[in-house]
Length: 247
Image (tube, rainbow, N blue to C red; front, side):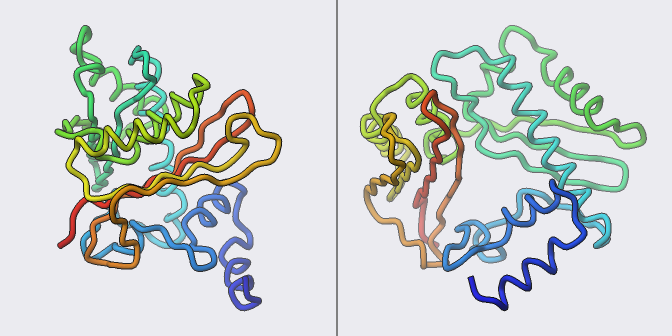
């Protein structure tokens, strides 16, 4: 990192709390590597959160979004009992107005959450309101079903994480994930795993690419996610790039 860029980073985080600093550093591109979703914002990629705030209240709104997403994921983990461990949440969109917060959950397997207990959505809504102490603002949660769940990197990363926790070989887990992605009619995929893979003492990075993944082409619609999984050997990082289509 250059001295000029280091000064810019220090100016951004000076006087901030620990949580605010972490969020700012996660959103800032470092080196030559940029988030494929942020790189395409305003062209073929939209925001997952839509709201307006004054500069002094921006960090509070950012933390609020993070709490909402964590609360929903924790609830889904507790109430969905499936062997693969896949929650099936592709993304969570948040739209904030003056007195209303609209949350849209895009899920690959919504029946697993709704089946057996039809009032689960109302219960989830009450949990989020209780967690964030919403008194004067209404909360509305809707669930949207995804037709091809394994064409989304978040769901695929959860599948690979479940396989790694069960001590399946990382190559076998990646190849199975690529097979599932091919069924979703994608044009290409790249999977990268970093850490103490298969329990080796020296950490390393392994990746496999299938098909085309044009990261530098802005008109290419590329879905991306980074996911952390805790295993008995330590923390592994999973990154997935999926080339969906070209506009």
